[in-house]
Image (cartoon, rainbow, N blue to C red; front, side, top):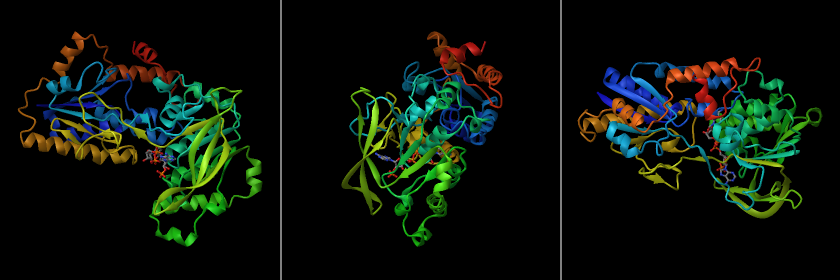
Length: 442
Ligand code: NAP
């Protein structure tokens, strides 16, 4: 029997468990750890609350979770409650599927001002992550600036722009919905340091901006390259650029009918965030530097201009949290690894392996890939004999340390309570603090 500990119960974790089950069938036992009492990581806390069809993939993970040789071990923080070397004593393989939960800093003056947030914090806030439930962004200003031209920037801009009615069927948490209801935003500026041909936004998600009830997207025609050049783009990007072209063609009468404008400000690099004296430490303005793109890189032109910014959300990517005793690649912001192998016996997968890129589905081949690495190490003898204690050993350690483990059965009770508390039309009202989650399991 082989024992595998997977750290992190998001998509990468569950796909790894699925792959290990397929590979070793009844000859493997898998424990999936999560520091929170609730599973699914990015699906619960990252995927936008109005994208419920994407969240539906958790049903597939539930099937894995309910099989006999897989167990959910919630409310256990690896690195605090139990160390990696301790897990290595207990399990043949430890797989880090911890994602990339930290914001990459912008690295410009004024980043520390009030009402400036990274997307991990801001998305975590509207998705009810316990760490960010008290973020308290001030949405009373008129101008929001969203930095970055990826799908997270799109999520944030769309969530800021939606009406109450447009959240029907969404599991946005009550504190965020209340704040958005009271918002006075008139402009949401999406800032990109490069141009239309370098956006990371995918067509389906970008197209959604054209169908918002009270907001219309605006693109400056002068920012668009020659249409003939679009032919050279890969098909997905070509479709996204076609959306930008259609946004540029939206007549002024349509903009005039909508109280919120989502303006794309491309060829613009964040230079400084500036607050005002009256508001003390709160942001009021973003200073941008005009850029031009040369050989795919944004080059500053030395021309600066200011855009009003009462709220700033930077959506420029994420970093993995380092864990004691595990080699970390500071430059890449993820664990140092060779195709998922950190060292024989310790592996990483998903964003913790390759950084924050790709769709949820990208993690499936990743999971299967890392299981192949484990299999290679078993076959070449690097993991020793199959005599590790596995979950029985962990249970002894957990009881010695009085860890309060949340099981998958407990999670189902928490889920039931969240579903019972849902406002009309919503799938659930999430608990946003750990104590409430634990209480709900009964
Ligand atoms: P992303 O796609 O890598 O986009 C990051 C953006 O930030 C890029 O436009 C990048 O510009 C910009 N940026 C980076 N550093 C910057 C800086 N210092 N100043 C200004 N701009 C900067 O990352 P993401 O939006 O965080 O998304 C992460 C992954 O999750 C992606 O694979 C995404 O597709 C996926 N995702 C998917 C969905 C969905 O399918 N619905 C939703 C959310 C996220 P440069 O290109 O110039 O570096």
